[in-house]
Length: 133
Image 1 (cartoon, rainbow, N blue to C red):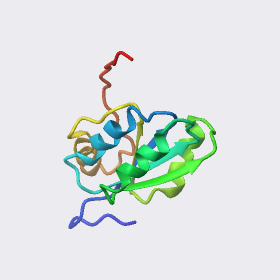
Image 2: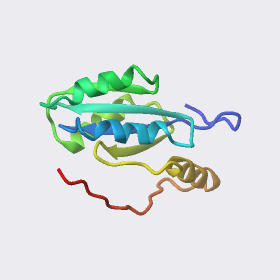
Image 3: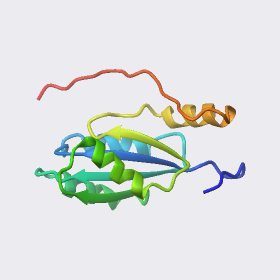
């Protein structure tokens, strides 16, 4: 897929999901609510045994940006690689299903990469937060 200055490059966000029904909606909504508009979300359900798949399917009815792939449990690395097989974006970003993006995260990274054509990787700091079960 070629980049055209008239349209922003597509970013594929791969969300690895394993038994995260309680958190995955917040994670995906943090992607949907990005200030950067040109995204696809690929949620890879890694053989969850909880309600994760149903939660994802319900969320899919509210956005056309979300695709759901279901596999047998294979672990994080293989799950991310599965997501990569379905990615159409020029850029790829990973978000675990119990994490969140700040609203401008993708825009900041894409702007940075577009201004530096020889740069192939962009990363940022992490903020930790916890919930009490």
